[in-house]
Length: 360
Image (cartoon, rainbow, N blue to C red; front, side, top):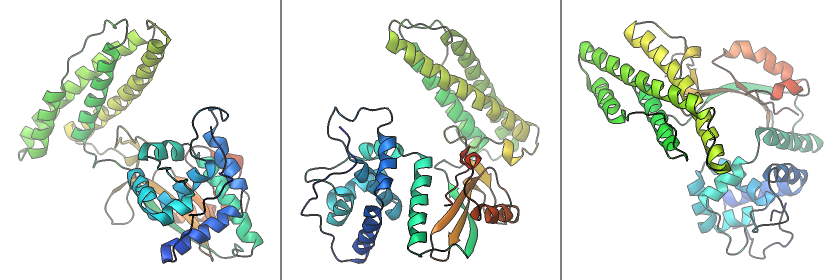
């Protein structure tokens, strides 16, 4: 059973008088003045669920406040779960009931349900309130860019090949557990692949490194061949029951994606390592799991892996606009468009892809 908010306030929800608690109290007052935000969050939480049955889950208000608290204090989900159990100020801000202690997995499941479009709409509500209270007039705008890194290990061709072999082998093993068992066969080359990966990392001579790369590429091609056979088998697979058929289709989708990524990694490894070519940043694969990651280089600073974000801030410090750009566009090329965006309402096409408009 899901509710927007708990109508009965806890008498023990008293915030202590320290700096962090006063900031949380100010945030809480802003949220209370804009109840329409809860409607937006509630819609995301109940999209595919019934609200009149089941256990008493977190309210939409609690989920929203947990999400804000996580970002405000830069916490992981496990850290957030700990502080919600340990800190009276945090529990008061989130408005948890006595005996209510959400776990890290529960927090992740609920917070992840809030869509990017909802956060965009929430920001618009806050900007409208700021304009009504004359906190922000929007006459002066500061533009800046930064890089938000994705959680990936430092990408090298050898580690990407190892990731591809590991992911595809795991999916092939999962396919063998289906009923009836598919006929496709494969061999587990993970141990041999890890051995070549260690040889590449510790090689002092280019000949040893080159030979290890050739052997690793050969193993990756074999795994790719196994995956192609499995894809052909699973395309017409009918399981012993509906659950088996659904599981087979999920494995098929993941295999097709993994094979596509492994093909790109094989190509870039051959071009860079074997033929000595330079692969453009836009064509590189830097992660099997966060494949949307871009290669970002700002000036003479170190290469970073994530997304380039352009922010427009007002005189009050409020964020008026946010654009997550594809690739690594130059700041000077983006600023004229950002100024234009601040002077017009967001168009429907601005919401597509990875471009997120927060302007009001």
